[in-house]
Length: 226
Ligand SMILES: [Zn+2]
Image (cartoon, rainbow, N blue to C red; front, side):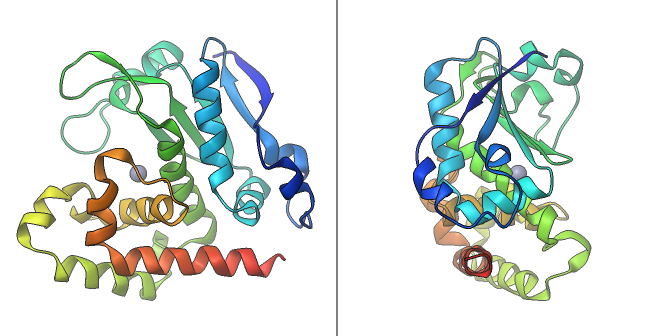
């Protein structure tokens, strides 16, 4: 995979004026793009990254988290494309984005699970924020090793208050084992203002306690370094 270095756009002055407690400015600004992605895709990814408060971005960068924009998993990661991932029989080629070992990868297009056709990813910046939520979770250790009983309580409270219909509709977030992890990541996307398009209002309505919890730790993180 060939990557082209390009600085993310927007909000640079604001960011530079903050104390750089974590990492260097260059680490913060850079998103790596595969050759061939569109300017529109780059702008959308940059807008997603910029939606995340600077102290949180710096924390992620200081832990070696990187963001990459690719054409599609099939084009740029062909060996990985046929690997099964998650629920509903998805393969990696179906992914709009994913996070693995500190790498946030966002794809400009993906194979639609519904139609089997290649489709442009709707709102890649929102997918970037969801994956950044996973990266943030890994860095601060909320859902891993049950380190935060408070988040577990918030999540259980939300799931218990849901109708069984909602629980099925939001199966991605209510499923055993990974549901809590996915909820943290999506609550992060909601908290920074860019929820995954498919779940937009539904998720925020169904998981108010989880969203409030994640919003709270983003604010704590932001205060801690100012
Ligand atoms: Zn996820």
